[in-house]
Length: 147
Image (cartoon, rainbow, N blue to C red; front, side):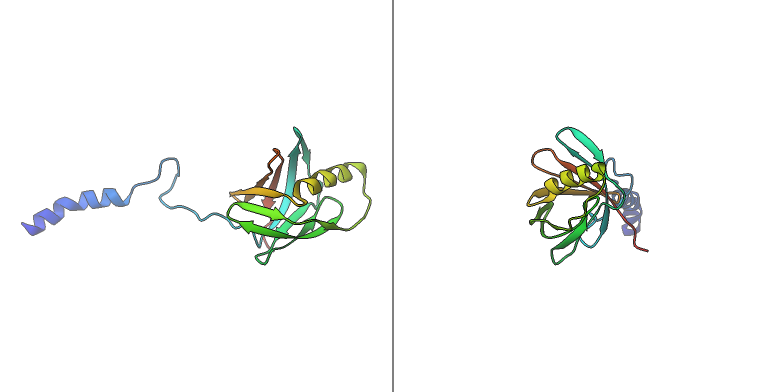
């Protein structure tokens, strides 16, 4: 009798163990990618309803200890950043002062304004990072795989 009861429960136990979350495509949940310790390439910036493509070399890196640095499109910058949950608060940017062509400088000014002293909401998905500001600014970045 005990053997028969156990045999009858096997299909139910197997069915319970194979549930998949709706729309997930798999039975496991991937951990959210960390924002810190990753070299992020800036792809584009949207501000004031205009999207600007980032020039080559524009980047951002935030370390666990809060040190943040990168390139605004022409000039390098450094600052301190605080990561709390899905929010990143950047301190005032310290930058180099090199002059570049007008397109790079336009992008640089817009990216500096989006980061300098601002708190942004961070969302990571599939190796991409999106930073969204309170006035609709949106910075799109892609993680760069280490060599």
